[in-house]
Structures are given as structure tokens and as C-alpha cells.
Image (tube, rainbow, N blue to C red; front, side, top):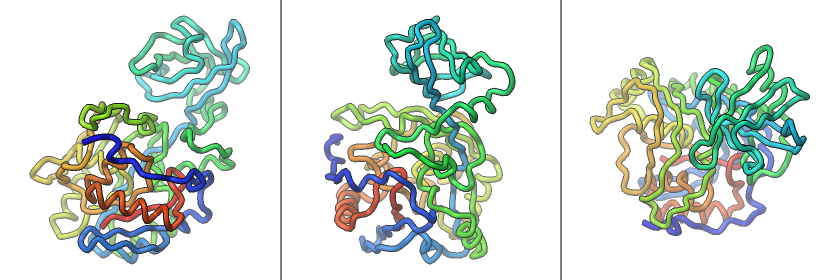
Amino acid sequence: MKTSDFNYFLPEELIAQTPMEPRDHSRLLVYDRGDKSIRHMHFYDLPSFLKKGDALVINNTRVIPARLLGEKEETHVPVEILLLKRLEKDLWEALVRPGRRLPPGTFCSFGGGLLRAEIVDRAPEGARLVRFHYEGVFEELLDKLGQMPLPPYIHEQLQNRDRYQTVYAKEEGSAAAPTAGLHFTPELMDKIRDMGVEIIPVLLHVGLGTFRPVKEDDVSNHQMHVEHYEVTPEAAEAINRVRKNGGRCICIGTTSVRTLETVTGEDCIVRAESGDTGIFIMPGYTFHAVDALVTNFHLPQSTLLMLVSALTGRDEALRVYEEAVRERYRFFSFGDAMLIL
């Protein structure tokens, strides 16, 4: 299977630059795998496709303001550090720019010296190990000095950083938002709960690898980025109970899908676990925990589009995407949503 098999034409003007207001007024394309039908709705119509006894599985990760802009201490050259993963209390894996000017032993300064970063060593895929030096509480300094790490295809300045968080974001650690969840409002979630639909949180800290292109011509040769996940005993028990009683497990976002499929065996039993996952879901994959999916529209030739294609079939996924382009849906992180039944 070739990476080029997952290409499609997307006019640049369909890449959403700003989030929809209100959140749940985004459009919702509904695709039924049974009859291959397509319906055009709005996200606030989602409850009409749910029923009592179903479960929505959400990713309650919270994006940190992981982008730091400062200067190299010796030369005052502007630098950027993008935090990827916390390894120890003050030691992070990060991307740095300009990389060639920041070898191990370099110190960078942020906020006039409120926060200092020491480049400790090189890491895989061009990253660096960075140790921070400061007084006070690191999280408070990061909140004061950091910026939201918006995807590279978003060029507009984000006026309200909370719009790159889901309303249910809780556990800090992501370098990117689980964007399918951006469409929910507290009122919509209350309405769904009142229907008798359980909302069950799992955790996957989204890394910037989610935006990295597939460079291999043969999809099977692609190495997925690794991300930290956690499924609590309470979440595992609730999902297993819902499915045993005939309810559907409806994942909100591809991150929830990857989390559940990581911890679910061929017996279709969800297990409470935590760790790091590099699961790569592509056509031919057999799903063991996921019955339906709410997701945004993804980049051409991306692993996320490949995951969607595993659920719908490649030809159907591309047909649906062509329809979305024709109907002028908004694409990517701040774009519209798709419900796959």
C-alpha cells in the first residue's frame, strides 16, 4: 500500500484558520458504513445519532503552552524551543531552532532570564534534551511565557488560548489538541448525559509527531511516533459494561481510538493500562473496541487519514473527502467534523 494512495485535492482556502463560534456550530458530515450514505448536519445535531446505553470515549488531555520564544545567552540570537515530552522533573525532549546554533552546552534565556534552558544532548529525529533552570514553579512560568503550539498550517494568531483546549481538558501534557473534541460545549455534553449516554475519559498526550508527514513510499515502512496513554480501571470497566449491554463505543477523535485499540485484545476486552503506544492503524486493521468515530478532516497522506480509511475503507474515505471538499467543509484542526457510524 502506497502513501500516495491516500492523497486528495484540497483547496488551500478550505484550511480553517480560526475556530468556529459557538463551538458546536461546526458542520458535521455523517457517514453510515452500512448503506454508505452521507448526510450534512451540524455538530449540535450529534445527539440525534446517539442512543441511551451508548458511550462517548473522550481524551481528557490538556495542551500545555509548549512554544517558548527567547534568545541564546551568548549571542542574543532569537531561539525557539518546542516542548515535546517531559522525561524528568526539569528535563524535556524538545525541538529547537535554529538547531545548528544550539549544540549541547548552550544556554537559552526566556522572559529576561525568568526561565533558562540548557541544551543537554541530542535526541532522535532532530530533537534535543533540554534541562530548565528557574526559581518558583515551572508550570506557572510556562503558563506566563509559553505560547500554544498551533499546527504549522494555521497562520492566524489565536486570540483566546482556551479555544485550542477541549472544554473537558484536564491532564496537562499534550503538545497538540485532540481536535475532534473542540466542537463540544458544556451544554451539549450535559444534553448527551441526560440522554443516558455515558461520557468516559481516557488519556493520550498528543505529540507533534501527529503532524509529521509519512516519508516512506510504502506505508508499512512508516514508524509511528510514541505517545503516553492511560486507561483507568474505572474507564475500562465502564466501556466493557456498555459494550456487553449492547451499547456502542463511540470514540471522540483518533487519539481515543489509538488508546483503546492499544489496550484491547482480540477478545475485545478493554484493559486498564498505562504506558507508551506507537500503534499504527491502517486499512486491513481489525478494530476490537471502536464502534463509531467522531473526527475532523485530516491532511492528505497522513496517518490519521489512514486510520479513518481503516474504518471506512480507503475508497470510501476518499469519496467522502471529495464530497466534503465539494460541499466546502472546513478542514484540519479548527475545521468541521465527521461522524462515522
